[in-house]
Length: 429
Image (cartoon, rainbow, N blue to C red; front, side, top):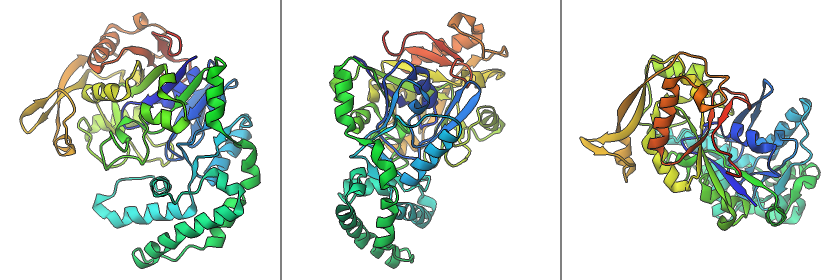
């Protein structure tokens, strides 16, 4: 039965939460395979807005079991704050499951994240300061603390001691900060143990058994393709693999069991944090997209950098992830713009590039080559089919599809779950 992956095709904030929520009523499991509380989703259900950070968007689907996979890093304090906020609004979070193998974000990870960014100065990456990068660094360095360790105080203490022996040297001697105590850190984790215990299972076993039983599993990647530590605009990336291959590793579902890979892409482009962005707008049109699109980070409130649709990025993302479908979001934000540019290639020092330049140096110097499309003024928020769109809006969508390397299967024409034109079924078609 289907294992479906949802992946952001740009730099994040494309609307993955909406896509997950839209499909949530038809799937049995919704899994977050990577990232932490640095990757926010906004989901609108019945006019109610929900801002999710660590929890998968499937937490709002009444029939799906939401899971935090082994590839995630979990801030326990943030987790329970989010759970409490949802329950206060009447949501049921009791079905949540968390992998015993997921790694934990410790208080010292957050301290290191913030002081490191300040120390980098102009070379700062633009992280959220939530300790995600340092937690993944410890995971790879085999100094990490996993969810299961919270239930064994002896193992937990040994791991905290080993990690802080190194980190305190760095904090005190390089960053001129106070040392962090082992006892206070161990107690921080132990305070969550009993509340955490009912949520923790062997998620890989359960997911594979679910597929064996004919159930549908949806994997909801955090961040996006161009924040991938291998395939993104390095070093301005996250510390995990939010591409389709990373979803397999971060959930324990083998790649041969994945049947659909859906790329989520905005009808324009945004990014948060530092790094190259060829179509970025620095004028009043950029401000217009930012305000009309509500382009402010769910986690930090930081304004997102805005620019035009980049078909070169879309084609490259399709290749990297093996997309079977694209879900285009926020088409409605472009309503009222007279001429809409689309980047179809780059000019790098006088040389045309129809595909992504090999080096980040060239990408830094890339200038967009635009094609221009006539805009529309009609309200599209109630459109249910492609034919109900104004002619210019329909032409814009069809042109993007032809340039982007993957068929368009859904188009968002408003923020609500129901404001979506579905062209192809994202699970069975």
